[in-house]
Image 1 (cartoon, one colour):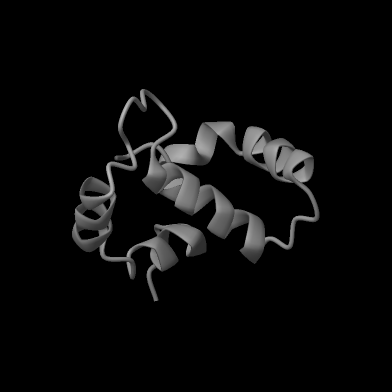
Image 2 (cartoon, one colour; image 1 turned 90 degrees about the vertical axis):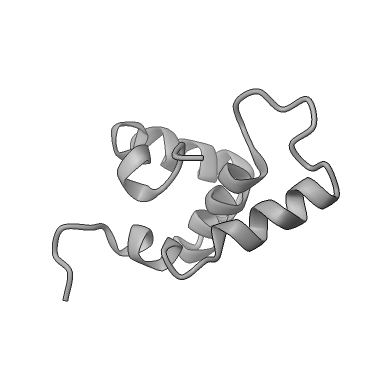
Length: 78
């Protein structure tokens, strides 16, 4: 068991980033995007589902509470 990573970061490792990037490039999903990429949106929505958030406001509050840990959770790397 890997104790040095958050559980969410371990779940993110199962996702194939290269395949996801290929699909995003194919449909130009990140066209004109500067900060909040499709990858970050996917991870944010996954976090919301897994943490049983009830609204977008609730999700924003939860993400802001973990702002210092965002990189370790897998957000903001790509």
